[in-house]
Amino acid sequence: MRERNEMCFENRGVVLILMVPDWETQYMIFYQDPTHIHPYTKKSIDRLLNMCEFKNVQAEKFIQLLSVWNNRMMAGFSRVIRLTGPVKKVYKHKFIRFSRELMILGSGRK
Image 1 (cartoon, rainbow, N blue to C red):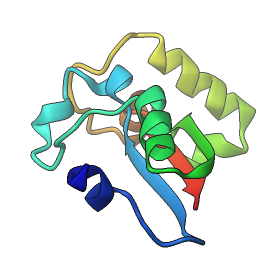
Image 2: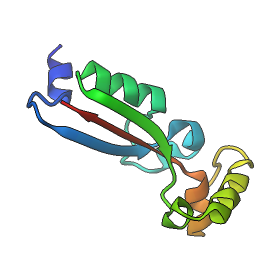
Image 3: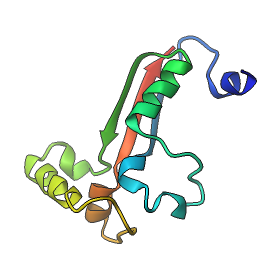
Image 4: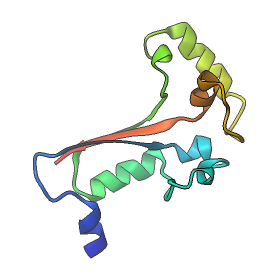
């Protein structure tokens, strides 16, 4: 129980916004980054924030490319790139890399 309390914010009025690698799209390369300790999915972020008693919890997959946020053609191209399956290597071209390496964007309020 102590570990749970250390992990959770005890202060009220806190808004938490977090972004972590999406395990489902990066499981083949996840541990190539030595800072990656624990894999997360949308469901596990949702459960974690609810376990820590956050309200208005949201978790969604997020593309780290500004060019796809308001451009339907670029968003469509990004989706086509993701159809090739899970990421098997880290790509140097940023558009290809971040079209495939999705993140989980989570938020909650105390």
